[in-house]
Image (cartoon, rainbow, N blue to C red):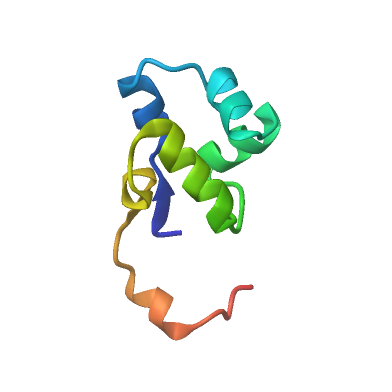
Length: 78
């Protein structure tokens, strides 16, 4: 998938622990871990906003995208 979650880099740069961030945002450590690993198919805007508020960042700081022409073909895999 061309979308990558870059949350780990932000956590490190802010000197935070994932456990503390999860508690501050109101997520379980498991939920945050799944998001960090990119194993989720979606995230609520409310949760994204809470992460951005806690980390003083923008959504684009949490996600990265690399163009893949195959993405233009549709959802044939899913």
